[in-house]
Image (tube, rainbow, N blue to C red; front, side, top):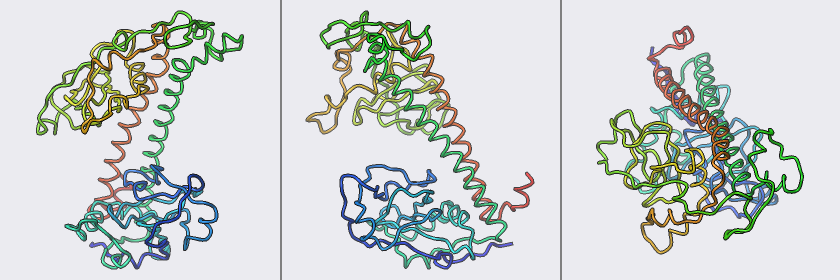
Amino acid sequence: MEIEEVPFSQLIATVVDNRGRSCPTTDHGLPLIATNCIRNDQLYPTYETVRYVSRDTYLTWFRDHPKPGDILFVNKATPGRVCLVPDPIDFCIAQDMVAIRADQKKVYPKYLFAALRSSAVQERIRQMHVGTLIPHFKKGDFDKLPIPLPARSDQVFIGDVYFDLSARIDLNRHMSETLGAIAQALFKSWFVDFEPICAKAKGRDVGLPNTLADLFADSFEDSELGQLPSGWRVGRLDDVLVLQRGFDLPAPSRAHGSYPVIAASGPSGHHNEFRVRGPGVATGRSGVLGSVFFVHDDFWPLNTTLWVKEFKQSTPAYAFHLLRNLDFGIFNAGSAVPTLNRNHVHNLPTVIPPIELVHAFDRIVFPFMQRQRNNEQESESLAALRDALLIKLISGELRVNNAQCS
């Protein structure tokens, strides 16, 4: 049985469209999200390089505001990207996107969201603007976009499954972000701000188990870098770890294989061989500086990276956070294509804590990193399952009754 297709415009109760001109902004206030905050791999908008509006602007400048459950739809540059509006709402929207409120008498809102995210509808949106310099998708285009519309019960099933799987993926991401923030905060507390040493020096409780608290000094001494915990020393980065330039690998060789390929900007395909045993750490050497990557598996670092060849007074987890705390911006001045010279990095002065403390940090943080990896792998599997199911259910290739029974 073929599934009916209905113009997008006929499934909409309200469109919140806030003018095609720039909104007055301030340095603080309510976030004003832009199109870069709308991504098809996330359930709700992100806050990336947001601006802000005053309370007065929020109340008087806008024609209307989204409500929880509305669908944010990008109209310009990347038309067709959609996210849901959360509850509560802590942002407002202006130009280049609209908020769609589904007509619940005609369509289940979560199904409409899933349908707009489907590869079939996304391809239809893309084909309507192939060849344009800056793609636009105006409200007048909504009549031209057909949306598959199965029976209501099927809509509810498809919409709920898509939402629930997406929510689980979002939860995994938030959990991983929290674990990463905790690990970074712990590194800063122990190895940058020396908070446990400060507490012991003032006779306060460190707030750690005795076996761990005993690893921290209880006083400071002068050094060329200022006051350091007693027993710690100043060295160079290559006293802690040794960096090595990555290896050449033609782009066609990165398509398939069991081992990740790491470029200056991050993962860049897979290869059927590896050059470095994991877990390992790599950072951008050419083009992108300051991005640091922890790699659990054996991997191939490209020649645009530096990778840690030897962990001398460090562990992979400690080296990862140490490199993340370096100011790579000092190597970036006056160069069209910034490039790291590993000798310059090796010569950076570095505080070297007792190795027992480094290992204690690793025992706490490495399980966090493993959990982050597990979350990522689970999310990849869930996303693949979700998107495959969506294609088959919306097309009618897989009937909802069969999906419920399987």
